[in-house]
Image 1 (tube, one colour):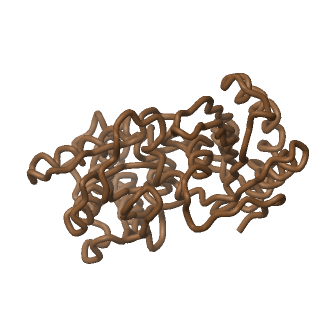
Image 2 (spheres, rainbow, N blue to C red):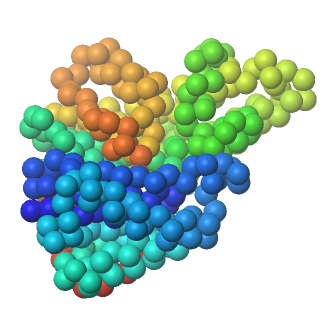
Length: 331
């Protein structure tokens, strides 16, 4: 069975083809980063228009890379929640049109669950359940308990801003490029992560997150350095200390949930899962606590950020009683 996945919930136009063994036959992503760098963030209407212009060439390349045609496709899946409404509309319209033209059933799937299950893509060995998953992206931030390949439970979520959004905003405060996560990480390598003690966000809620207060603390600290004329010489220390504060919070709550639910594995997924500092901090905490946990993250960078392979994967999993339809709309 071949599933063609379509992703357009934000600023990535992506189409992928995945088989029943969860092998990724193609995973084509057309990024809008260069367009949105001009505005230091995603402009929804602009993103939606860019999707429309890129769907056809991305589809053609995805089919070519996989060595198949539309006649070989058994199911089309498309992100129809959550996301920027205009961007979701473009993806759902394209998916529904493809389905009607080629007489292929179409299924709307949850973008967030795509990230949650993304460690299954191209996997060479079995996953041991239960698994606790930390999903960290620009638009959402959750903890999930995966009891089996078909059963999941949300344990906690952000009560305001997501970690990825926080990275982007702090980068903007420091005059760095968009997207902010990679830029913060690069700058942090030259700073002292213990030089500024930022507060631990929402410490009394073990599995929920909140990063709006941390952003405010960073903003106030930057203002202090601006007023003293010492901002430039302290930018790396701000980046390092901020990264330490947010990654310590994320890793601490992930491992708390893992011990609370006797997890066999912990997975880190979403765009921020590419952050090497966060990966190493999780491993370091596992080792220091002597926890018997297998730690995984997506096998390649293309599975960390928004992608269509994870959307196609959901077509092979029996989640939420999903049923194919002829026309899919955003939810």
